Amino acid sequence: MPTQIEAFEVDEFATAVAGLETEYIRTGAGVGPCRMTNAGTTVAKLSTGSMGFSAISRTDVPDGLVVFSLITAAPPGAVWCGVDVTVGQLNAYGPGTSFVGVNPVGLGATFLTVDFETIERAANDLGVTPSIPSSVKPLASRPAVERFRRAMQAASLRPESADEVQPTAELVDAAVVTLTNSDSRTDAEHRRLDSRKIVLACLEYVDATDCHQPSMLELRRAAHASESRVRQAFIEVLGASPTQYFQYRLLSRLRDDLLEADPTRETVTRIASSLGVTQLGRIAGRYRRLYDELPSDTLRR
Figure 1 (cartoon, rainbow, N blue to C red):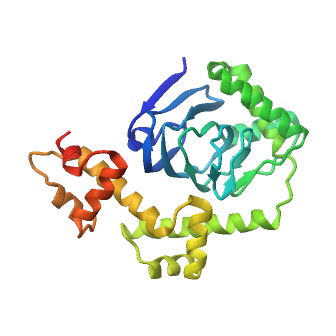
Figure 2: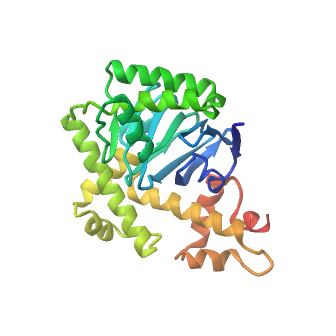
Figure 3: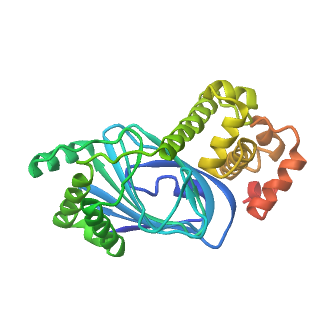
């Protein structure tokens, strides 16, 4: 039976997609929870859902796993990894890669996660040699991709079918065939890939140093890029400047720590100070605008 997830907090949604862990940074109020339905067999896992609040996300694909995504709903102006999002858009993500993107309210997607060994077995049975992507790869329209798109759309409407071996195996076969021909990459796609690399280099630096409010100089050095190029990359990929993104990220970390803390032993000031916050009043105002409550209210809950 498919399992369903309803999440009102970003940490509750972090492992919603089967086989993946995603860091969500909330960027605005929502209209309800995020929802995800998971189904699948030992062959592959299917996850389909929608966003109830806006967030920026980062996902690291584990080694040995290939991921496919289909956009099932997209509000006007939606952007993902620096690319305008349209309903029916298909992407493939190779093992060990990372991808980041903007998740506006109303964005819907279906994910198919498949073990690399399953891809190899299916390719051998079909007598084809797939080209596994080394990063995010948009799948350009052609007959094989259109067949896979229809199969993903059908699975999105009936996720319970992914609990059956035969429909899931057919879905995997369709996915494998889409990888047998490499699509040409335009200059614009090269530029988007470069922007993603810059953003990911900055995020990896921040993770490694546990620096919650990095300076532009630190980001420039981490990305080996100019200040203007770093700013441009963040806006292209995440729809926010570095300053805005790391403010959202800081508020998200603060909320996680407040929700986990013991209000009889901890204070908002002490928790905020552990994250490098020196101007609590200003942060509290931003926190209230984002979560519709003060940090002290969150701690008491």
